[in-house]
Amino acid sequence: MQDRQILLLEAVASSASPVSASELAQMTATPRASLYRHIAALLECGFLEETETGSRYILGLRFIKIALTGKSDTHVINAVSAVLQRVVKDLGETAFLARYRGGRVDLIHTQVPADPSVPYIYPGLGVRPVHACSSAKAIAAFLAPELQQDLIDTLPVRFTDKTRTEPEQIARELQQVRRYGYATCDGEIDNGVTSVAVPIIVDRLGAIFSMGVVGPTSRITPAIQPRILPILTKQAIHAAAAIQHCSVAHAETTNANSLAAAQERASQPH
Image (cartoon, rainbow, N blue to C red; front, top):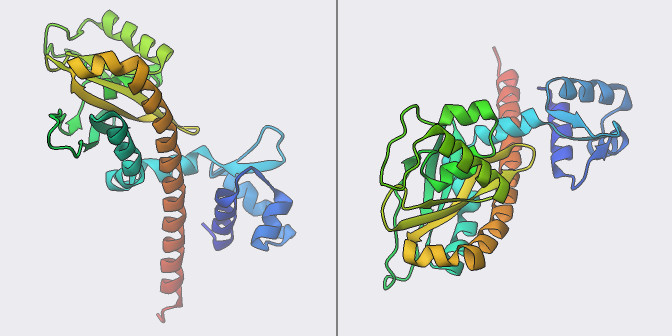
């Protein structure tokens, strides 16, 4: 990728709204003679996209997807950590963050309450079963059907007497999750433990992350509608914005670093 094209991407990424070709020319000091050639190249590879009117440009889905899926768990956790801390402070329960990648859903981070006098649930980290775990349900319900099916185990494990293992039951619940916008795990993995999760909808990529809380059933169930869902829904919007921002920033930094390295190699004597 040429230096000028990186400048154009940076200009689009830094703009609060779609930008026109004339605005890009002014922002990047790109001559009109080459501007449209660079824009055409970025459109062709999916790094830029035209708006519906065809006269303004936004970052392309391919560019955003590369930036996001290539981001390490650590980067995502750092971006969302403050959001999870607010959830824990507001609800007094353990908060968690999950991620879809590589054909599975993993719980990648938890934030526990700071008050040592209040018992809490620690859910652990790692792969989560779609048929039983709220964090995985909240993601799977919003994926394309073929991706959704890949996530569901052929022989789902029955953890407790509340675990749904029949394909029809699992499909019906995922439909309800998509309809109502949240998922629960009510004693489906451990008796007496309930979790609630909502999808984190990243602009133009969908629900590839989820967040939620877990705790004793006696505390979680009565609070789902009046307290937990309003807070989770609000904070999921903040989490999506944080993930989107850090992903674009990371992609720009990566491109700039790659360009700098290439330029340095080119300047070295052979």
